[in-house]
Each structure stands twice: as C-alpha cells, then as structure tokens.
Image (cartoon, rainbow, N blue to C red; front, side, top):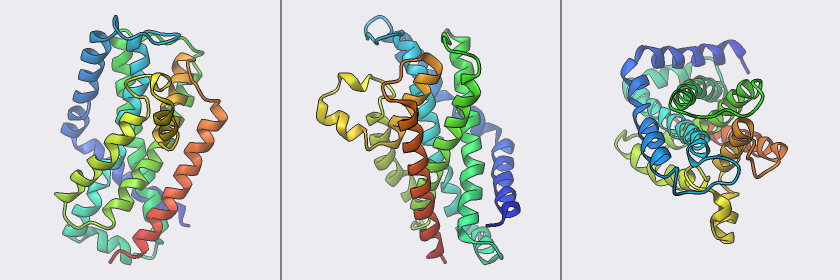
Length: 249
C-alpha cells in the first residue's frame, strides 16, 4: 500500500469536485427542497418521539446526500475508461487497492462537504442542535466513514460497466431501496417488524441512526453497534471493489 499514491488520487478527486461549481450548487437543490417541503409540510402532521419532524429529517437528508453523492461519484470511472485515463492508472506501479482507496477517500470527502453544507442549510432554516458541540466533528467523521463504503460500492459497480448510460439506471435500482429502508424520511420503529428486520441489512440505517444520536440524541441503536456495522461494511465493500478492479482491463 502506497500512502502517497492514495493521497494523490484522493487529492485529484477533490480538485475535480472543487473545479465543478455547478456540481457543488446543483447537488444541494434536492436536499433543500426535501427539507423545506417535507420538513415544514409534514412537521405538524408527523409525530416523532423526542424531537420535531423537521429536526428528525435533517440527519436523514444528510444520509441521503452521502449515499447518492458517494455512489454516483463512481460514474467518473466509466468516463475515465472511455478517455483512457483509467488505463494509465491501471498500468501505473500502484495496486488496484490503492486506486480504490484513493477514489473512496477523495469522493467521501466531497460527499462529506456536501453533507456539511446541508447541515448548515438546516441550521439556517431552523434546525435545533441539542447536543454537545463536540458531537459535530464526530458526526463529520461518521459522514466520511459512511461515504467511503458507498463510494467503494459505486466503484464495484462501475468496474463492471462500460456504458455511462447504464450506470445511473442500475445505481438508482440499488440506492433507492437503501435510501427508503434506512429511516431517512420516516421513523423505522413505526414500520412492520419484517420491514425493520430488512432495514437492519441496510448500512445507511446505521449511519443515519448514529447521526441522529449525535445531533439530536434520538438514536435507537447503541453507538458501538452502528459504528461497528459501518466499519464492517466499509472493509467488505473495499475488498470487493479492489477484487473487481483487478479484473478490469
């Protein structure tokens, strides 16, 4: 494992993100509308234990941003393959695991930046933070750890695809169930028991629950269980993505 190669690839992903101002602004549109229309529209209708529905929704939308931003960032792998840049990386004297880690770290940082911007918007329009201030940097760390796994998931899919048009279709088929099952927009404890059991297989469930615990103090699962699930998911999916990348030509 070459730390310099991993950091170089991660830095490149950050630079690509920073240079695309439209991407930075455009990806904030959907989270903003979710917070305004769902948050305020259903605030007086949906009862959530321990907090308002709007405050309940903010960590969920942060989780949504991390999921979509992370997974869809892997689309760059397909375009890089078309333009030949990916081939140059694959023939470089670095391991495929280093490539996966570099892209995962770089794109998880961009996803975390987007999530932090969503949290800032939440504060501006009425989100009430009720926990100690040091929970915020811990929450950012949770965003980063969650993003790494979801970027690697996107990379695993992108490594087997060559058509940029097919990638969004397949990813949407995968990420929307992850999004809806994680309790991002409604309390999972109100769902049927069989649906709650399925939700426990969703890695985003643990990220969102941990964010709610850190920002609102309303988590349903012990923190150690959530962080363990996130780390296990990250490790497993990074190994899978690295394995699939070894088969990429």
